[in-house]
Each structure stands twice: as structure tokens, then as C-alpha cells.
Length: 256
Image (tube, rainbow, N blue to C red):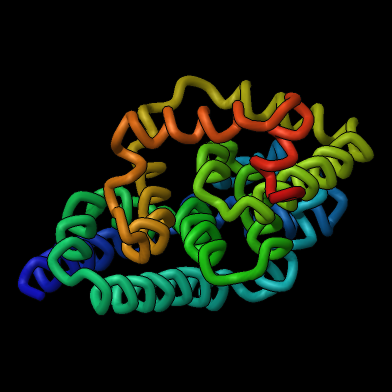
């Protein structure tokens, strides 16, 4: 508890000191939707806004939130992220108190950075967290949505339940199809991403590691994925199937 209190105090002091300078990334999503609704180009905004850089078909997903006035929208965005963070910490603390405190200490900077900028990476972390507690179709959907938005969550596919892996690939194909249907805007999106200029090392992406906590904390062998033997066993299990097609079907949960 002492570790968590100190980390919370430091992050809280940082957020207060930032004041109105915070929320640059969340403001980009908010402004991008409003520019789009007014017939403008969200990938090349006018005014003091960062460009919206996600798939064009995702714009309506932000719309209910972006229609709020900015002060209200920012309060809802950051407040919701903080409440979700506290809930996940509470759950993890009840399972493994000291380990939870140590992980929060190690991830203090990326957590604080995401709360400061309002980057959606923290919300995607909660989506990955939820994949442990929902059904295969929902878990695959959450992983696919997070992956199509950022691509950094892609490796989490390996820790999903087998049926959820299959659903995840199916949803990823659906999202790819939606982007192809809107190909002209998708090209503009890619130009915005690769034309953004030189970016610093994104240490804030490390917050995604928090999404793996329920898989590790509920495991009988928490450090299983850190041992090379785990991957050797996985490969050997896949090789037991008589043909590559059946190996793949077994890995994504389509057959026992």
C-alpha cells in the first residue's frame, strides 16, 4: 500500500501541475470527429490540434463522446480512465498485493504519460485486460479492435484462449475489409501516419503490459511465458497434428 500511495501521489501531482496543457491526444480525437462531421479532413486539421491518425471507419466510434463540449469530454475521458485503472489495480491487488504494487511502480511513467496526454493506449490496455473475462467472440473483437488501431497489441494474440484467437483473426479480417472499403480515406490515414515526422521512443506503449496482468495473476505458473521451455512445448504440441492445416485449426481453437 505504501508503494501504491507514493506512486499515486507522484502521478497525481504531475497531472495537477500540467493543468490545461494536458489532453493533447484526446483533443486530437475530439477535434478530428468534429472536423469530419463538418465536412473537413480530420487527418489534416486546422487549428492547434494534432491530426487524427486512426482508421476512417473508427470516427463514428468516437462521435458520441466527441459531441460533448471539450471540458466535459476531457473530464469524462480522463475520469473514466482513472476509475478503470483503480478498478483493475483493486482486482490485481486482491490477487497478488506485493506483485501488483511492484508492477505499478515499474509502469508509473507510462501510466502517468497516458493519463496526461489522454492517449487511447490506456483504454486499449483495459480492453486487453477484459479479454480474460469475456467470451471468445468478445475477446477476439477487443483484441482485433486494439490491434487494428495500434498494432502494438498484436503479440497478445498468443495469450488469448484458443477460440478467442480464431475470433480475433476473423475480426481482424472484418476490420481490414472496412479499411479497404474506405480505401481513399485509408490512404490519407497512412499518409498522416508516415508523414507525422520523427517521433520519440514511445515508452508510453509499455502501459499495454498492464493488460497481461489478469492472465499472469490467475495462472498457476505466473512466469510460464518467461521460460523458453514454454515455447518449445507449444511448438511440439502444434507439430503433433498430422498436417499444417490441422495444426493451425488446433492453435486457434477450431478443433481439440
